[in-house]
Length: 90
Image (cartoon, rainbow, N blue to C red):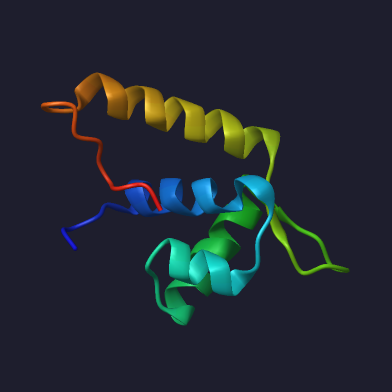
Protein backbone atom coordinates (compact mmCIF):
# COMPACT_ATOMS: atom_id res chain seq x y z
CA UNK A 1 0.00 0.00 0.00
CA UNK A 2 1.29 3.45 -0.85
CA UNK A 3 1.92 6.19 1.69
CA UNK A 4 -1.20 7.64 3.29
CA UNK A 5 -1.34 10.98 5.03
CA UNK A 6 -3.00 11.43 8.40
CA UNK A 7 -5.90 13.10 6.59
CA UNK A 8 -6.31 10.11 4.24
CA UNK A 9 -6.39 7.73 7.20
CA UNK A 10 -8.96 9.86 9.03
CA UNK A 11 -11.14 9.91 5.90
CA UNK A 12 -10.95 6.10 5.67
CA UNK A 13 -12.01 5.79 9.32
CA UNK A 14 -14.89 8.20 8.78
CA UNK A 15 -16.07 6.18 5.76
CA UNK A 16 -16.02 2.97 7.79
CA UNK A 17 -18.00 4.53 10.67
CA UNK A 18 -20.75 5.93 8.44
CA UNK A 19 -23.20 3.14 9.35
CA UNK A 20 -21.83 2.41 12.82
CA UNK A 21 -19.16 -0.21 13.41
CA UNK A 22 -16.83 -1.78 15.95
CA UNK A 23 -13.20 -0.97 16.69
CA UNK A 24 -12.13 -4.22 15.00
CA UNK A 25 -13.98 -3.38 11.76
CA UNK A 26 -12.42 0.08 11.78
CA UNK A 27 -8.99 -1.50 12.21
CA UNK A 28 -9.48 -3.82 9.22
CA UNK A 29 -11.38 -1.29 7.10
CA UNK A 30 -8.70 1.39 7.45
CA UNK A 31 -5.74 -1.04 7.43
CA UNK A 32 -4.45 0.03 10.84
CA UNK A 33 -2.84 -1.65 13.82
CA UNK A 34 -4.65 -1.78 17.15
CA UNK A 35 -2.37 0.91 18.59
CA UNK A 36 -3.03 3.19 15.62
CA UNK A 37 -6.80 2.67 15.86
CA UNK A 38 -6.78 3.61 19.56
CA UNK A 39 -4.85 6.81 18.80
CA UNK A 40 -7.07 7.85 15.88
CA UNK A 41 -10.34 7.02 17.66
CA UNK A 42 -9.29 9.06 20.67
CA UNK A 43 -8.50 12.02 18.40
CA UNK A 44 -11.76 11.72 16.41
CA UNK A 45 -13.86 11.41 19.58
CA UNK A 46 -12.14 14.47 21.06
CA UNK A 47 -12.89 16.46 17.88
CA UNK A 48 -16.54 15.27 17.88
CA UNK A 49 -16.19 13.69 14.43
CA UNK A 50 -17.38 10.28 15.66
CA UNK A 51 -19.35 9.12 18.69
CA UNK A 52 -19.17 5.93 20.75
CA UNK A 53 -22.31 4.17 22.00
CA UNK A 54 -21.55 2.57 25.35
CA UNK A 55 -24.28 -0.09 25.21
CA UNK A 56 -23.50 -1.46 21.75
CA UNK A 57 -19.83 -0.48 21.55
CA UNK A 58 -20.37 0.96 18.07
CA UNK A 59 -18.58 3.99 16.68
CA UNK A 60 -20.76 6.23 14.52
CA UNK A 61 -20.17 9.24 12.34
CA UNK A 62 -21.45 12.56 13.76
CA UNK A 63 -22.86 15.39 11.63
CA UNK A 64 -19.49 17.16 11.97
CA UNK A 65 -17.75 14.00 10.76
CA UNK A 66 -20.10 13.73 7.79
CA UNK A 67 -19.40 17.35 6.86
CA UNK A 68 -15.63 16.76 7.03
CA UNK A 69 -15.88 13.57 4.97
CA UNK A 70 -17.95 15.28 2.27
CA UNK A 71 -15.48 18.16 2.13
CA UNK A 72 -12.53 15.76 1.92
CA UNK A 73 -14.15 13.77 -0.89
CA UNK A 74 -15.02 16.96 -2.78
CA UNK A 75 -11.43 18.16 -2.62
CA UNK A 76 -10.16 14.70 -3.54
CA UNK A 77 -12.41 14.68 -6.62
CA UNK A 78 -11.18 18.11 -7.68
CA UNK A 79 -7.50 17.22 -7.51
CA UNK A 80 -7.67 13.63 -8.75
CA UNK A 81 -5.41 12.72 -11.63
CA UNK A 82 -6.82 10.60 -14.48
CA UNK A 83 -9.94 9.83 -12.48
CA UNK A 84 -7.94 8.13 -9.71
CA UNK A 85 -9.11 8.75 -6.18
CA UNK A 86 -6.70 8.79 -3.33
CA UNK A 87 -6.73 6.77 -1.08
CA UNK A 88 -8.57 3.67 -2.24
CA UNK A 89 -12.03 3.26 -0.68
CA UNK A 90 -12.17 0.97 2.31
